[in-house]
Length: 68
Image (cartoon, rainbow, N blue to C red; front, side, top):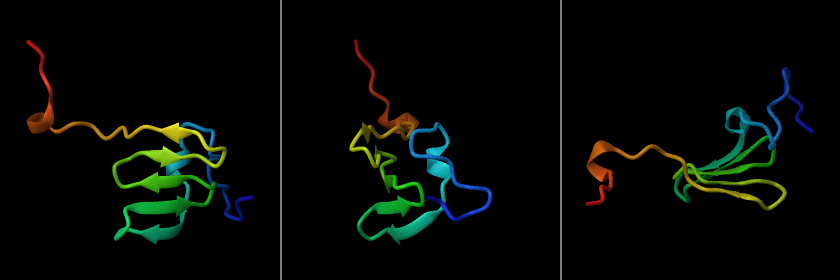
């Protein structure tokens, strides 16, 4: 349970990424949030129940892929 007031958003909510960091390891590319979510620097997530959220960082204009 989150000890913060107001409490951090739960792991299954849309605002889960705004929970407080309880461990931060930028050299390894991840942070553990108060709600149990592992947040990776590529914006991917691992939820406490084992579900994976694919990275959702917007692509830069230089990285956009076009098809012909």
